[in-house]
Amino acid sequence: MIHAPSSRSDGRRAAGRAENSATLEQQLERGLEDGFPASDPASVPSKATPGGPKPKSRTAAPSDEKLLVGSNVQINGRIDDQLFLNFMKQLGGVRANDEDLILELMTQGGDADTARRIALEIRIFQTYSGKDAYAVGKTAVMSAGVTIFSAFECADRFLTQDATLLVHERHIEKTFTLQGPIKSCKQIIREELAALDTAERVQREDFEHFVRGSDMSAEDLFERAKDNCYLTAQEALDLRLIARIIN
Image 1 (cartoon, rainbow, N blue to C red):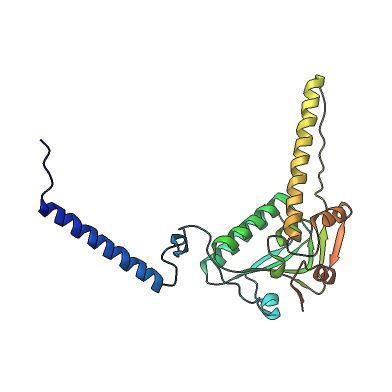
Image 2: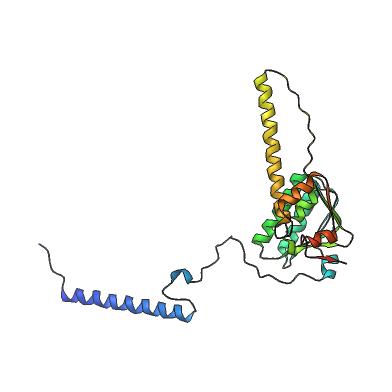
């Protein structure tokens, strides 16, 4: 047998609906007072995702004096494993303090893959620390050093008056022996060509990072880099590859 709901039960349901309606109206009113349209859920401010990129407010670049003598990370000399370990230690100190990153950079070059790893760590710092990062190239920023320099936006790069940039294609020196069946030899050649194709793709990505936001195209840089491309500080400034020359 099916029983019809009692009038008392109906009253409780009606009261509940009225209470829910009142609560919803209060929430909508609070939303309007907070400055976002109550009818548009997408306009409700969202909370930052824990562990995600931290927002940072763009601030004016430090003074010339601060850039010249106030660096908190230094890369001077050949880029190798030992230099990388020292760099990571210095970067850890910057992370622990409430300060922006100011990198002093002078190098004739070194290991290309180590330079790419350093550039990666700098980009991670920029994304997740919520701090600004600046690079000051002094005297010579060459070869793999340009890869590190390219981790910074053009507006955050600076050169001393005497500085020279050198950009060139990645140099590879390797000897291999073909011995055995023809098919095996062909496979060796295919593997070597694949490695070269990968190296060329990575190189192009580095060039694109370097010129992004400047008046120089990646294609132009790629053509110049076939023969060693030297750029003075003034030439880099004219191409808007750097923010300014500091003295």
